[in-house]
Length: 291
Image (cartoon, rainbow, N blue to C red; front, top):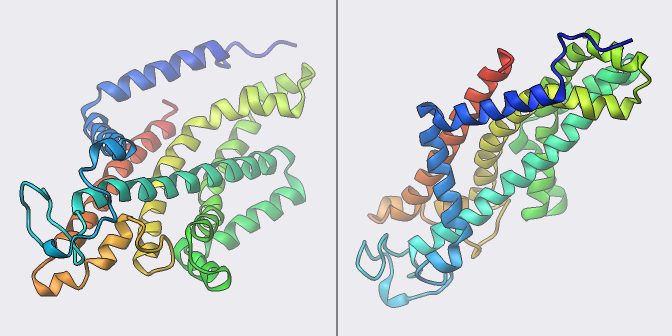
C-alpha cells in the first residue's frame, strides 16, 4: 500500500520550509524585530571585545556619574561602567531562557508525541500532568524551588523548565493527535514503519511549525520570569552582571536622581521580550494556517 499522493513528501516539506525562511527574512514585520534581536545577541556574544571595561571593575571616584566620553551610559552606585555591565549581563539574561526553552521543548515534545501516539491511559496521565503543572505560574514554581534548594542559576533554570514543559506540551499534543489520525500515518504503519521512524520522519516534521512558534513565545515569557526572579534575589546573584539584577540594584537610584541603571536594563528586557514575542506570534499565525 502506498502513501497517498496528497501527503507532502519530505522534499516538498523542505521546499516549504525554505520558502518560509525566505518570506520571514523579507517580511518587514519580522525583519525589524529579527535585526534587533540579532544585534543584541551579537553584541553580548562579543562582550570581551565590545565592552569597554571589566563589568565588575569598581571606580569609587566615578559613582553614579552621567554619560561621558569615558562612560557612555554612566556608572552605577559603586562606579561600575553601565554599558559594560549591560553587555555582559545580556549573556546570562539571554542564556537562561535559551536553556529553559531547549529543556522544555525537548521534554514537552517528547511527552506530547508519546501521549498522542499511544493514547489510552498513558495519554490521560500525561494530559492531567500537563494540566496540573500548567495551573502553577512558572515564577511561583521557581520561588518554591529556590525555597527548597536555594537561589541560583541551576535552580531557577530547572524550575522554569518544569513550568514551561506543559506550556509547550499541551499545544504540541493537540496538533500531534490531529496528525496521528490523518491517513498518512496509517499508511506508514501498514508499510511496516516503526513507531520511532514514523515519529521522526512524519509526525515531528509536521508538528515542527507549532513547536517552533511555542518555543519562540516560551523564550520571551521565560526571559521575563528569569529577570523577575533575579530582581527578587532568587536567580542570578550579584555581583554577576544580569539585567534583572541591574534593575534591582538600580532601584534606589530611581528616587535619588540616578535612574539610569534600572531604566537601561529594564528597557533592554522590554525590547527583547517584545521583539521575540512579535516573531513568535507571527510564527504561530503561520502554523495555524499550515504555512
